[in-house]
Image (cartoon, rainbow, N blue to C red; front, side, top):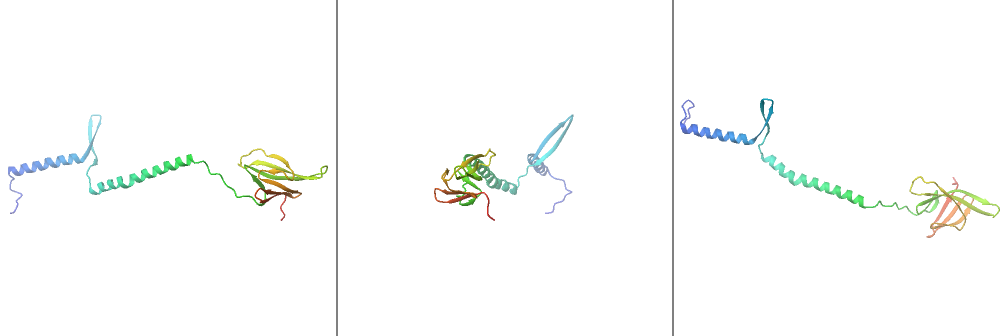
Length: 185
């Protein structure tokens, strides 16, 4: 059967065409998001977006829900937990190794001791030393000077010998430490 475009259509054909046109119009109206902007007395209608779902966009939306959102939430929770943990934990104290041998400053508890000088007392016929005591925290606090003699105790250290070049100390666990005025080169 050959279709001839010049022959007139019958009434049932017109009805089918009209129903198809009406259905297509409703479908198009539901897929488009119309926004109306009234400016003065003129009414302007514009099409904002075309709401046509595609299989690819639906799949991407599902993947975002499964992959991206939980990953972002997990990263946010980890960052919050890390911040809470850092606030709760006190700072770790720095543990320095025990001193031994010739040192510039003797560490005893939260103080440092530096040798300032060694002197001879002609009247008593003895040698004594003057040391400077300062806080090891690094804060600028005034130094305190102290006269020390052989046999005196500084924290865990006992002064064993004082000579004109320095002081020899021994710790409670028998480590030897020397504070020297001048180093031999």
